[in-house]
Length: 523
Image 1 (tube, one colour):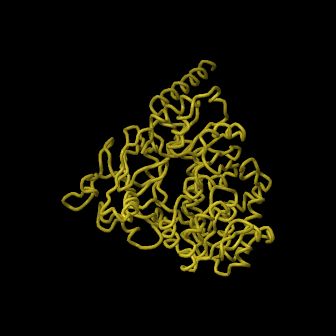
Image 2: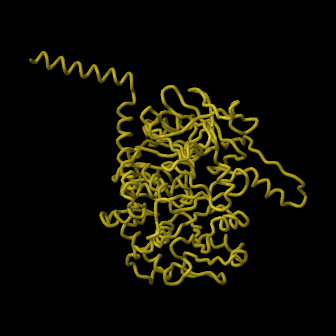
Image 3: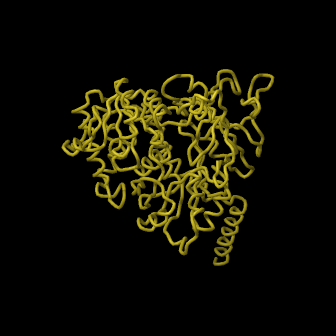
C-alpha cells in the first residue's frame, strides 16, 4: 500500500515537472485567467441585468466599507476614503448652488496638477452626472483653447498653481462663454470664481442619486486628450464601460488591497487616472500621489511610505537608471511595477540595479478597444497571448505598406494576416461587446481610426496605428508607431503641431518637422 502511494506521489511530481517543462507559464496563465474571468463575469452580469455599475459606485462601496482606510497619501498627509467622499460631496453642492449650468450631461474641463483635490473635484462633478475633460497642464494658449473648444466644456476649473496659464487666454475664454473657477480661496483675475472657500462652507451630505439617473454604460465618463497625429490633440471619449475595464488592471495583475501604490505620472493621462486611481478604488488599496515625478526622491519616497507597487512609463525607469549609483539601492519593499514603454536594455539594467521587481508591462491606447498584459514579466514583451486568451481577445496583425502608409490589400481588396514572428499592423474588430467610442468633435477624427471591409464586406476594425509582432511562444512585442509623431520626455508629440507653431514666425515660409536621435535622450 505504501509502495502504491509512493509511486502515485512520484508520478504526480513527475507530471508536474513535465508540465512545467512543456508549459513553463502554466500556473501564471491559470492565475491570470481566474482573475480576468472573475471580473469578466461581473461585467457580463451588468450587461444581462442592465444594472449600471460605475467606478463611482465602487468608490461609494469602499467609502462605506472602509471609511477610515487611507485612500490617498499626498506630501505625507493621509486622506481616507471618507475624506475624499465628503469633500467631493462638498464640491458637488457648490456647483448645485452657485453654477446652474453644471448639471447631468454637461462637460466640465479640469486643468489641475497632481493633488487630492484633482480627485475630489473629478468625483464631485461625476456625482452630478457630468463628464470631465482632463486638460494637459503643459498646454498653452492655442492648444489649450483648442482642447477647451473640442471638449464642449462651458466650465473650466483650474488649480491654484496654474492660474497664470489661464490668464493669457482669459479674454478668449470669456468670449466663448466659459465660466472659470480656481481651486483657491482668492484670485486677483477679474471674473474668475473661487472654489476652495465655497467648498469649506458647503454641506458634505450625499448628492441625490437622481442626478446620475441618466447614466448608462455608454455614457461619457471622461475626455482624455491624445496627441493628434495630424495636428492638435484629440479628446478621446472614455465611457463608463471603458473606465470599469481599465479599473480591473491592478486586480488582474495581482495587486491587492494590502499594497501601497506609488503614482507620480500626471493624472490628466489615462494611465494614472484610469488604471491608477480607478484601479486603486477597485481593490480598496492605498495610493501615494506625487505632485511631480522626481528621480532623486523616488526611492526615498518608496522607503518612507512602504510602497510595494508603482506605475511607470519607459522614460521614468530610464531616469531612475541614470541616477548616480548609491549603496542600498535594493533596500525597499517594492515587489511590482506596472506600466508601458520601457526599452529592453533599460528593463535589464533596472532589474540588475534595483532588485527582483516584477515588471508588468501592458499595452493599450487611451481610446482603443484592445489591451495586452505581460503578467509573466517576460523581458521586452508588452503582452502574453494563449489560445484561451484569443477566445476573449479578438485582434489581428495585418500586412502594412510603410511607403504607402496603409494596410496592404490583395486583389479582392482584403487585408492579409502576417505569419507568426512577422511584424504587422495591430487592428481590433469593432462590435457591440468591443466598441470604439471615438473622439469628441468632428466625426472625421473617429472615422480616420477605422478600417472597413477588412476581411469581408461590412466588417469594421479599429486601427491602433501600432506595428506589432507575435512570437511562437505566445508573446506580443511592440515594434513601431506609424504616423507623424515623435516621443519626447514621456509624451507623444505631433510633428504637424510643431510645424504649425514654427510656421507662425513671419520669416518662416515653410516648415517640415520630423524626429531625430538626440544624444543622451531617447525617443
